[in-house]
Length: 121
Image (tube, rainbow, N blue to C red; front, side):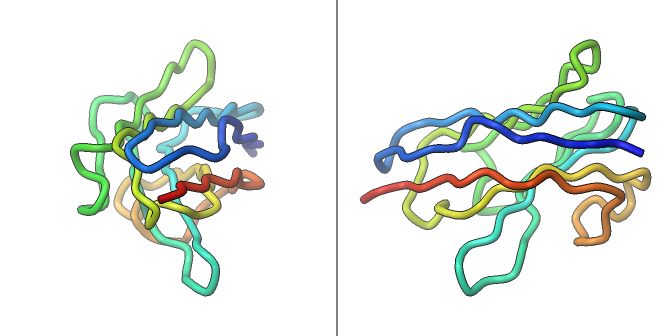
């Protein structure tokens, strides 16, 4: 089992940047992903990274603006978010998955509690 704790959310103006972190404890060699959920919307995939860190994946609307990375020595996954837009406002969730093939889906082995990101216009 793995436990996940996100941090780094907050309020930022449009065009600004934020960095999220997800600290993992327990069994940690998982593929990892970030999802987000805005009010009244379903939770959706934002970015993912393979267990080794060798492969990364992005949702189209964040490609080129967000960067996912991981430090396996620190058991931490990061999401660097640049050029933020008001439509990026959501609760961001970190997730762990044993299976790379389902990384973009909602089926996950573990979820964090979420961290709020608010982008003002």
